[in-house]
Length: 76
Image 1 (tube, rainbow, N blue to C red):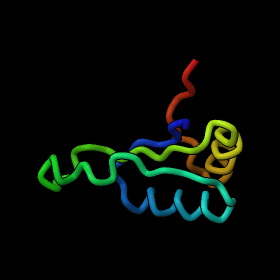
Image 2 (image 1 turned 90 degrees about the horizontal axis):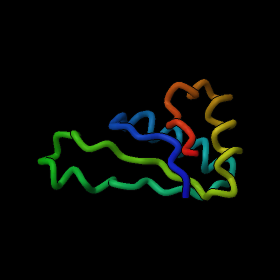
Image 3 (image 1 turned 60 degrees about the horizontal axis):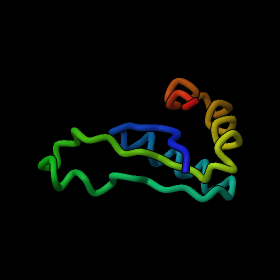
């Protein structure tokens, strides 16, 4: 799985989920339950991951939705 976005912004997470779901892409919101460890203050960001085979497509989808600035850098 490839990481697309790392954020604490719940509205952004919801929007990205809707985009990925509508495109029929499988995704995972990692670290969603970590807030119990940080006292629910939201200090630990959640990560949005997609299948490696569809990572480039997902990145294009998010860039087209003007979320390119939110994307994590590609790993070499």
